[in-house]
Length: 84
Ligand SMILES: [Zn+2]
Image: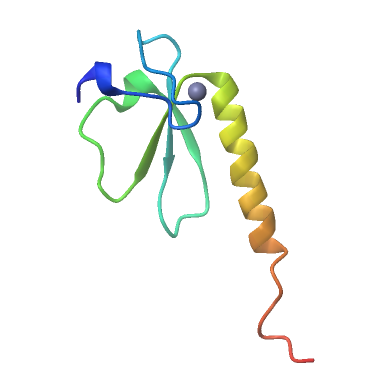
């Protein structure tokens, strides 16, 4: 992958140097979220996983907040098996 084409998935900032960029890793059907140093995920990416490039700690915090909000909405969703 060309480094010059990498942009933060959240704030769209272009990647300039490898300074503390993070990669968010999630997997459909897997309840969890992982943040890795970008240098640790330069290798060919697993097509079963979803990767998001993040420019640093600030955007990682925002993404974690979004993810927790999504988790909350799942937990608080009405239980369809309950009959009135
Ligand atoms: Zn960012």
